[in-house]
Length: 407
Image (cartoon, rainbow, N blue to C red; front, side, top):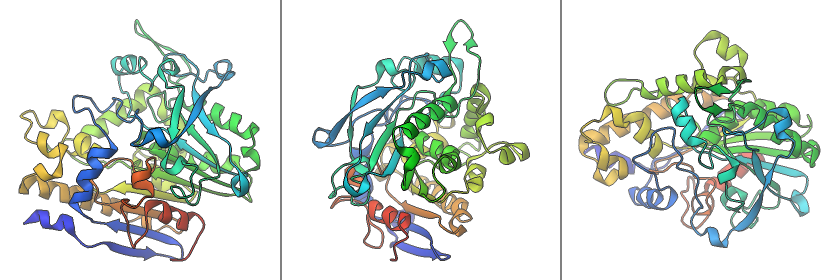
């Protein structure tokens, strides 16, 4: 029975002197719990919709941090889709972490058409007018040593996401089609980093740029720029959580998401923000983006990423009769044929990342949880119920990699 392979034993492998690759093909029980607790995906939404703009479980117990708007951003043209000011949440570090910085870029899909971007600008993912003024810092942003052992006392920043192109939109003119839109993600990134540099990040001894989903992709896009802005002597690395998206055919044989991303790049002028060598040789792809990142990168990705299953493997357009509807909501509902497709998707993920895993200083934590984004919530980042590989939580694995600790 194909489903038995979902319960494969933990696999551990190490490449090079400091390169790690972790693949946890683990329990269905945790996968189901993860799906219930981690994300409440709106199955009626498109790939460009918001699904991550929500509070994590137990957020009432997490530290609430105020929103800061970039007052001088408008003078630079660094504005959200609707022209409002971009923003971030900042928690000052303390003790031994006062000279270290952790930035986390919010996720939330993309918009690929004038219509979808016009709808998006009426939400917190397109306008600061709709953003919560206070948000909980949990998981990788927690200030509790018991929840975030290596980064709890660092300066921590959550960058709000309001351009719809992974903070890489780069069109100088406004889009006029009866509607006004600003594709200025690249300028937002630069304005936020400049402000943080003036707030003390210019003297950072250690720094980690992270992000979830679309924010994870933004992390890969801006990773080397982040490294270049900080002191050469500082330890700087990047962590992309559920930010590597496969370029795979869907169940109908079409490259649905490839077409979608192409539309995002074309509409928002994203190519100008990407590695020039990559763009000059071929159509930008996420595998190529990752290949060209020079700064050490750690990837956290579930092999059965439920967002990718819903939008890349079995998007609505490929399943007009909704045969996959129940399976996409829970692996427990998948039939043997669908399980086989999921296993194929998992294998493609591992095969695609195999070259990356050969890089010295690279790291991966790949588990089989039916989830999407695992670093910004305490339950999956570091707790008694967190997924583990080699008896280490994600937080411990990332910490070992960042500080070059031996296993």
